[in-house]
Length: 537
Image 1 (tube, rainbow, N blue to C red):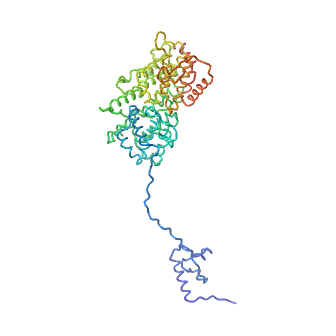
Image 2 (cartoon, rainbow, N blue to C red):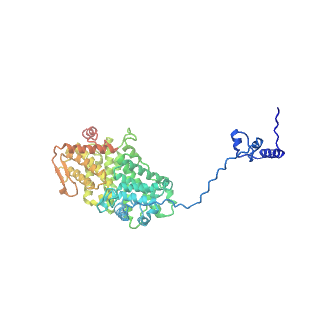
């Protein structure tokens, strides 16, 4: 039997129209029937395939379009200063800085700093700078004039230096792109973080931030003279230039202390000295530059054994000339502020000691030297001059300079102790009323006086090591608080005190472990075989 399917004329016409549309229109969505069978759909409702099978298929519902949200102004996050950092603390720290630190760090505009204090919440960058200064100042409670508290700030009125450092870092991280918007304040903040970590005895962090400061300075091209010619504001150019030279000095001192390489060179002019209240301070600052500018890459390459350990010095003249330059430097030191005098005079003697130590390490010293600076007993002369400075200047002048000057006195004392240990005949000065042994005891007293701050983490350690070396070479035991009063110092004959000797040895080992100058400077033996061979021939 044969079956025929017939469609009304009306349905046939409808199918033809659909097929015609299928040829002329692009289909975006197939119906359920065509989609399920994976056949071509013309997009009509119903489509031709559905009509031919006499089915009415449903299209899937249209996906609703998301509503466009109404734009609402959202307030940007606002930086909030810590409630633990009071206005009184900030003003106290700023006052201490400009009184005690500005003479040796003249890089801040006092008027601008005080004008910014009421608006620290509006500028995280300025807040970071202020808190970094406060961290440094609170590490020297003696210049604040009131007894500090060093616990959690929830319980005490004055926050700890560590908390202030955390606030500095928090302010910098508030805007993630502080590296992309560098300013002079960025350099200064990194410098003060370096200074704070140096006081805390955290050398890795200190090195990181001094390197960061110098990197930012170079990114801003402040090591190029042409940059200063393009700065329209003369005052801004002045403080930029001072910051460069402060980093120049600091890097050289730190390179000698920690055997680090140099980055900055003498590529710009010195800061101008204009008549006014800062004239004396700027003159002393330039004096300090003159002391350090002769310690260049050539000297540092000899000083750092890792740079070229096989490099030898073939002539005494460069080192003799450097000693003569140091001897004749800072002729007008009496005209400087007392804080600057302490820094300049002790730094000069310390640099002489560094040159002497290099001469020793290169076996250039002699029992019959052409000049005193190349003799084995030269540290005695250096120590005598430092003791004289400590007696002529007030303790406040030393306190203002902080751990930096303390470590220099420590280095000088260690060199003197090493010489006296090898040459016992130097201990007694003959007819002299003041003998070399007195110089050593006095240097221990100076280090002890400067070690009273609770947050100078290396201070007490330096005192114990130097006192231990003095005990060893003098055959006495130095006891007491070692403050300035002679009554507080007590020298006793040595006793069998194994525990105390063990404590000193542990301190020596700890200093040696932390300081790259070891074992050359802090070990009980300073290459004694070579020293004795040169001394006695």
